[in-house]
Every structure is written in structure tokens, then in C-alpha cells.
Length: 346
Ligand SMILES: NC(=O)c1ccc[n+]([C@@H]2O[C@H](COP(=O)([O-])OP(=O)(O)OC[C@H]3O[C@@H](n4cnc5c(N)ncnc54)[C@H](OP(=O)(O)O)[C@@H]3O)[C@@H](O)[C@H]2O)c1
Image (cartoon, rainbow, N blue to C red):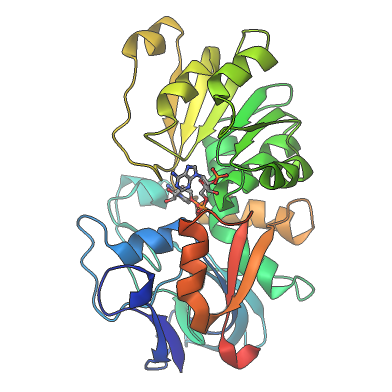
């Protein structure tokens, strides 16, 4: 089969689309005939290399994909050949206090398919049955591939961890990215008043379309000043910040007393400055969140399949152009998700 792969870390030009052994499912695994994959910023980090990440090379990247079940292992009863499925890429193999209480994301054994383990941007992929989510037959492959990681992550961050409720005000930074545009939709669905930032007017129009009532081009206006003006000096109840170092201090400044800063990422770097006085005096909460439990993922994906939420597709490319797909994310071109399709499916 053909698979996206790289034999060393580096720039996007290390990515190749070449022959790779077709995997065979173990007893608890499912062989998926991949119809579409989607990119996450994680694919960029993994390709560049991360501290402590020691991958067997060549590495097949990709955490998001959807396709048809081609075969199942002897112990799999939940799926049968012909079923439509999407990948849920979080996996914990350890037996510890967190896996026992049903929260694998907190386990030391937690890993992400595509990051720590071989990924799914290939013509076929084998996955443990518990890493697959059923997809109704009428859901387009692009939607099924693009939704899981970002909607799962945003759902846990805003709903389970952040407890966003109707009537609250929520500022979403980087609203044009995968996580960002999912967060806007989820906050709006929760009944919150949504404020969003992005780097161009075109991206802001899309953010409005996703449910943002107030938008700010942070390249032209400091977003902390904008939030103070928009809220008559009060600030917002919740800030969603996956940008990191560049925005952290201003994110804290945007919070109303008692506000919550939700974080799942640090695209611009992890070493942000925190004014500790501001945190205790205004009684702020800083809440970290990573991925989702399989249950959280299934809950939010039901709302994607029924059309409540929609992953917006910025571009669809053949898998042989995955290098270009990485560049779209790195150069911040477009709004929403980038999808890659096996060349043989085009
Ligand atoms: N912890 C978890 O479980 C988890 C899960 C998913 C993602 N993440 C992390 O969350 C972050 C976002 O992921 P994603 O897949 O949504 O990424 P993405 O689709 O590439 O979106 C990133 C967005 O951040 C904004 N941004 C602001 N400053 C930026 C800068 N200096 N460089 C690049 N982008 C900048 C960009 O929007 P504008 O151009 O409009 O500013 C861009 O659209 C990443 O750091 C990722 O690793 C973590």
C-alpha cells in the first residue's frame, strides 16, 4: 500500500508518499480502508520532532482518518466489514488509577496514534477496536476524518473541564484553526456569548459563521484592549488559549474576576509569563485539558454526525501532497481543517 511517511525529522520536504507494508489486524484490531485523513498541528510537531519522542523510522503520521472496515480480528464484535468508522487517536494501555476510573487522558501510559504510535495517513490502517467510532453512512468522508481530534479536544476543554454554561462570555483565540473553530461552535451551542480572534477579515467572517458574535483582527488591534472595550471593562468569563507564549499574558488580562483560562496548546511556545498577583487577586482559574475520553469523543461526534457541529474544510489534497498540507498549517493559510485523500481514491 501507499503511506505518507518520513524517515527523519525536519521541514515539510522530509515527507514522502511511498510504498509501506500493508498492516494485518491483531485479534483485537480492525483493518480500515482509509477514505480520508485530516491534519492537526500535532502532525507538524511530530514531523519536526519533539523532546522525548523517539520514533521508529520511517514513521507514518496522522491522527485523524475515516474509512470503511475491511477486516476485523477474531475478538472484535463491535464492527463488521463494510461499517463506516472514524479514528479516535487517544490510547492508554496502562492499568492505573486513571484508566481504572475511566480517564485514560490522565494516565502516564496515554499516547496519541500518529504522534507516539504509527499513524493513519495511509491507504490502510489497523487500529484497536476501541479507537474507532461508528460513522453514519451519509456522513461525508471529509467530515468524518476532520472532526474527531479537534472536536473531541474542544469538547473536553469547554464542556467537561471548563464547564461553560449559557449566558457566560467566552473568548476563543486562534478561532481559525482546527481547535479554535470547534471551540467557537461548542461555546455558541452551550449558549455562551462568543468573542473570537483571528488574523484576517476573511477568517473572521468564517468565525462569525461558526457562531462568534464579536470578532477581532488581533493583527490590527490588541485583543486585550478590544475585550475591555467590548465588555465595558468587565472582561470575559472564559478564555480559550491554544496559542501559548504570545497571547498568555493578555489572555489573563481579558478575564473577569473569577474567570477561567482554558488551555490545550502552546503553538507559539510554552514559556509564558504569568502575573501571579492577577491570578490570586482576581481569583482566576487556569485549567489545562488534553484530548478526550472515548466517551467524550463519541458524545461530541454524535453532534457532528447530526449536523449540529461542522468541521470546516480549508483544502482537500491528495496524500501525495501532504507536504503542502503541512505548509498550509505552518503558514496559517485558510480557515478550519486540511484533509488528505489517498491518491488511489481520487
Ligand atoms: N492538548 C491537546 O490535546 C491538543 C489537541 C489539539 C491541539 N492541540 C494544540 O493546540 C494548538 C492548535 O492546534 P490546531 O490543530 O487547531 O492548529 P491549527 O489548525 O494549525 O490552528 C492554529 C491557529 O493558531 C493561530 N495562531 C496564532 N498565532 C500563531 C502562530 N504564531 N503560529 C501559528 N498559528 C498561530 C492561527 O490562526 P490565525 O492565523 O488566525 O492567528 C491558527 O489558525 C496546537 O499547538 C496543538 O498542538 C492540543
